[in-house]
Image 1 (cartoon, rainbow, N blue to C red):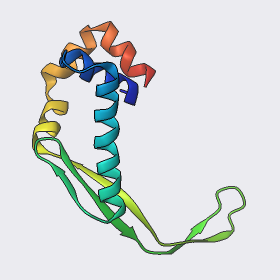
Image 2 (cartoon, rainbow, N blue to C red; image 1 turned 45 degrees about the vertical axis):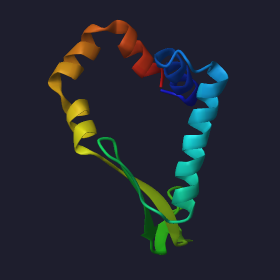
Image 3 (cartoon, rainbow, N blue to C red; image 1 turned 30 degrees about the horizontal axis):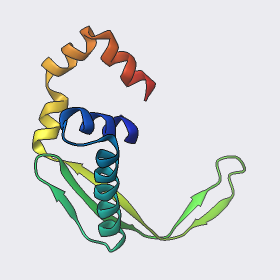
Length: 112
């Protein structure tokens, strides 16, 4: 699912929202998530999952082409841990069978 797909889905589910309102809502939510992560805050959405920032130490890596040693600097990376409800929904065999028997859903998954 892309950002524009998410906006369309939101506008379809909530008829009182225009396409522009749905776009603004998605933009605002994503900006809030980004701002919180930049500040190093943890984000938890119950039933969905949590986003945290992990610190990676500097390390010595290798250039895959030449094999020469390369210093990789320290950095902060975003980590997502799915919530129990999301893990169970994704792992549910009934959902897997339903998507396998629905060619439209399967072709949409392949497009991503």
